[in-house]
Length: 165
Image (tube, rainbow, N blue to C red):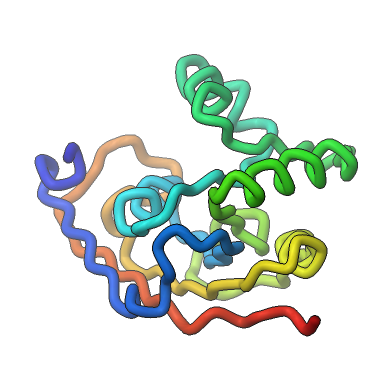
């Protein structure tokens, strides 16, 4: 709602590839700190986001993320057992996971090297990976800025990739 009030428009194409109610692992590039909110707004899924520990240390945001059961990841010293248990619980409960396999925002839009955690989670839990590309959010909320600008953001959803049985 506050995106619209600020004049930011969000367009999502390819949502026909998403099965409402079917758990999956959504993987996306990361252009802005706004991307998770855009995905939460655009997707007809119940999402849990894999987020770096630093996000949970931000006053108000961190407690809110814990309350809505986002999954905390310590990138310096990951507790793979805790991550596996939390992601499995979420998927079994019918929630999809949203991950940014690059692990950081891209300052120039270049796609970085993907870390393999999201894909390992999908294979281990026998759920599809849904690839997403997002564009334009860096114009709405540029890196390092706090003001939202009028602009258009688009995301493209592709067909799920199902792990081999």
